[in-house]
Image (cartoon, rainbow, N blue to C red; front, side, top):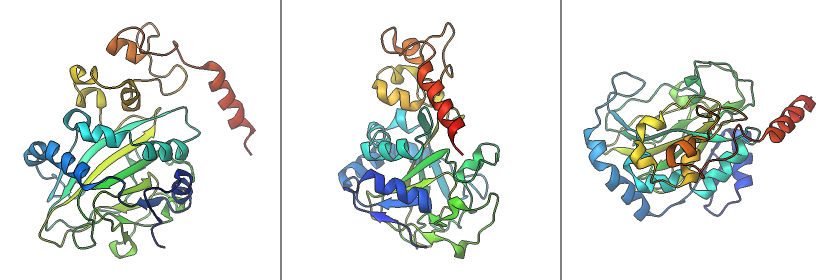
Length: 290
């Protein structure tokens, strides 16, 4: 099955439908080369200092550099890109809110073997989420051209509807070939893996992932982003990072304070425990489903 592809002016609803049907989609040339070069320039010192992975899954010729909110102002813009937030919000529409799950530059170096084909949602202690119930929506931004030779991410389109804990061989996957500045979106239930790099240059992919706010984040944003930096960030970005309740009464601080009131002072947060009426309406809607 082919990977669905869209132009950067595609309707978000079309991308959401592709994620529902195939678990993946590529949107071409979402940002220009100047934005990509800015990201690489901001992260270069950290990339150079990041060691290679310590096991086969992380990749012995792969560097994984995180903490991108603190380290790259341009990455903050990509995290909050309107198209991405629209697609994520509609893919996880039945959740009260979603949050940033991880930020990571993945640099697959020459000689790296293909990664084990897996589901990202296995990070949640291999919990068997119901089929068709998406808990994550992920992105990989191409920081250079993704080719089959240099390790383009491998996908099994449509496997978001498959059983859990399956095994796929490398030759059962499709490479997410795309040009620099494009973005691959895929759900946490899609089977995929990093490609083998048979070229003589490094493949750079910016992995930004979002998940339902009641799940634990893979990357701890509260420690990855020091508070002196966090206090300078826009409130909307901080909420996506997790400085917000994940549902009614979920994530408050001490005497029912909103996390933003604690971080920045009174006036930034929202009402106490949250919106009880909306929580009760969501429960009634859930009970009414067949």
